[in-house]
Amino acid sequence: MKVLFSPRHALHAPKRVMRLGGFSAGRDVPERAEQLLATVRAGGHEICDAAEHGRGPVAAVHTPEYLDFLETAHRDWTALPGASDEVLPSHFPVRGMVGGYPRSVVGRAGYHMHDQLAPIGPGTFDAALASANLAADAAARLLAGERVLYALCRPSGHHAYADMGGGATYLNNAAIAAQALRQRMRRVAVIDIDVHHGNGTQGIFYGRDDVLFVSLHRDPVDYHPYTVGYAHERGEGAGLGHNLNLPLPAMAQDAAYLEALEVACRRIDSFAPEALVVSLGFDAHAEDPSQGLALSFSAFRAIGERLARLGLPTALVQEGGYAVGNLGQCLTEFFAGFEGAA
Image 1 (tube, one colour):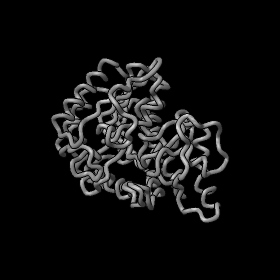
Image 2 (cartoon, rainbow, N blue to C red):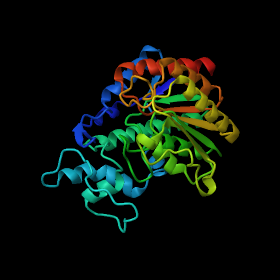
Image 3 (cartoon, helix red, strand yellow):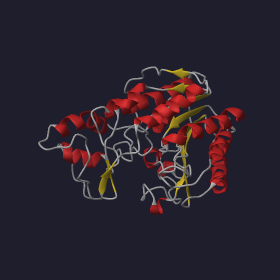
Image 4 (tube, rainbow, N blue to C red):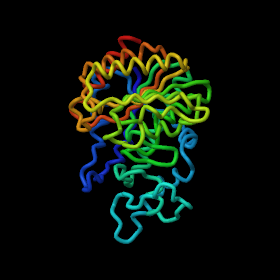
């Protein structure tokens, strides 16, 4: 399996996030990507540089205002007297009370970021662009005839909406890949196996019938992102029936997860897509600090095998996974299952 990687991910090195009312170290550290890179290198996988696709694939998903904010936020923020060295919003618009678009970076930060888990540093935008470019290149290679690519994306993307970031994400890599595939394919499916619901991906495609979104995740009733990811959310308008959420109870184990995965795969089969995008998170593992689900290493092998049996051209887009010491084994098991069944 070919692996797409960019060292520019290291430009994003957040210092702190706001969690439970206090500052703490963020979990999205550069070592995550370096551990995954070491794993694929040791496994003999071909590591490739991505072709440069410019901002077109990103602009096809995200709004001009949001992209401008991401590009200029750190510069404008740090120019304010007494500002911190990273952008962390302190003002959030109240639901139903947005009457205009603010000019101040303080107002724009709250407008465009839905939590305080995604600080913006001096290299964040460049790293996010490089991450998104990996996903765009994976899509381009699938369109050129390759069958499977692994885009080792960091920062992750699935919490990013068209005009909002959050949850340690800025640009929605999986959505960018899916939209790029749609330029020449009629139907594309996205399946999200990260422990957290892919709320941004859902939001981007919620009203569309050409992209099926399926997510397996910890029930948001008491887990991030809390207000999105419920089973009754099925899409709207033309997209009704094209959004499938499969929330799982706290610390659910392999059997329950794989049963839900079978439901997900049957729905993907019935949709008959021409390609598949996988939001590949490893934070559902029992030892991950996210403590949402309790999957074993062998579960990731089974997940990889089942997804491969869908028989679709597939872009694997890296999302979460924060137990740096076990990420390599999670990826090794997933690859073993996927490549063994492909």
